[in-house]
Amino acid sequence: MFAKIVVLAAFVACASAGLIGGHGLGYGAISVAHAAPIAVAAHAPVHETVDYYAYPKYEFNYGVADGHTGDHKSQKEVRDGDVVKGSYTVAEPDGTLRTVHYTADDHNGFNAVVTRSGHAVHPQVVHKAIAVAPVALSLGHGHGHGYH
Image (tube, rainbow, N blue to C red; front, top):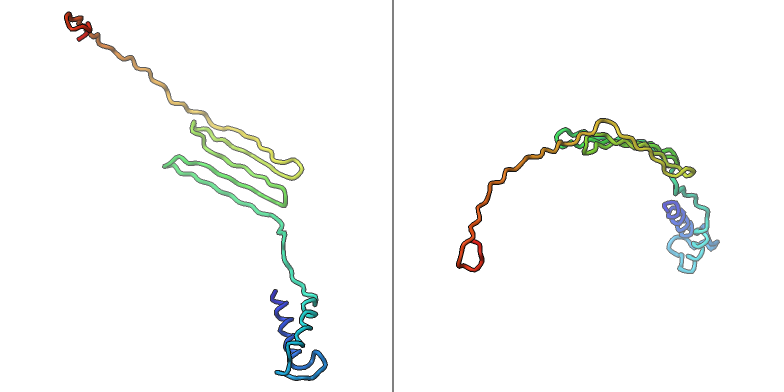
């Protein structure tokens, strides 16, 4: 866009100086009728480079290890064009680690392999016996319900 503005400004300067149009009118004598050749200048080849497609290539690593909250996880991924490879690990509530290794490309699609490591820890359930005291019932007479 900047190049178009420069070409347009140069054209107007040449037209004002009388170099375009052949009339030799000089600066200040240009009329609106002489502005028509600007349309010709707009068709002059202007080479602008616009990158509509940037090649996708990156690599990243991420991780959290918080002993206070128990939040433990990590991820890493590499992309080169349309091929993505990576893995992530998450601490499960039972104490095991779930690790997912994945790949994705335009030929095979998305594929993942999930593994678990570590030993699951489950809380022990304790059953307590509850002693129940006997309850005495009195079957009273004369109140109509039979219970007091």
